[in-house]
Length: 224
Image (cartoon, rainbow, N blue to C red):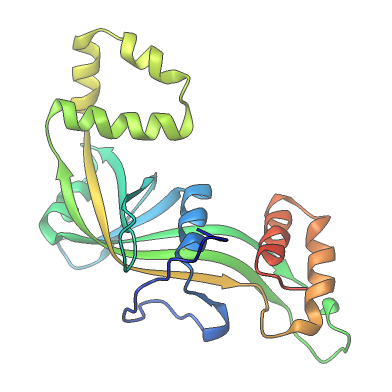
């Protein structure tokens, strides 16, 4: 979406604290983060009103690219023994959080000493409505989306399994679609402190995997 015009996130009520300087309105930022860090946190209220959490991979799909913004749908499943699917069904809504790269930032990156440490991170949060996936064929189709994301070479093996085994495996899960209704993308990279950018990038570029990815995002956002 970059280079050919940006798709911007539609206005919505804030449900996560995101200072203006860390808020991305570019939908491609959110989609890229969701796909690169697709092991998500799924939250729905249980029968007592408490948040109930599952950690799971999700397939991110853009259904249409029509204005004002593409429709995003997330596909996933939980074990049938996990009551989360019933909470999704009964509430009809969920929150999903995707945490991207994150790392400590030392105050030593500043040219003066009266500074404090912080933590830089990238994250996407979604509100979504829920539709359970029912039936053998539809559930299999959902699984194929996930297989193609994470292990496409396994698809041939999955297709070679006998029908009884496949039916048994599919009966043990409940699939769902999460239709994204609101989305927030937070890119916390010390944007409001340009005097630190060069030193942060240098520090992160030689660091661990998270730090190197943050350095790449700083370059993407032209934080020099």
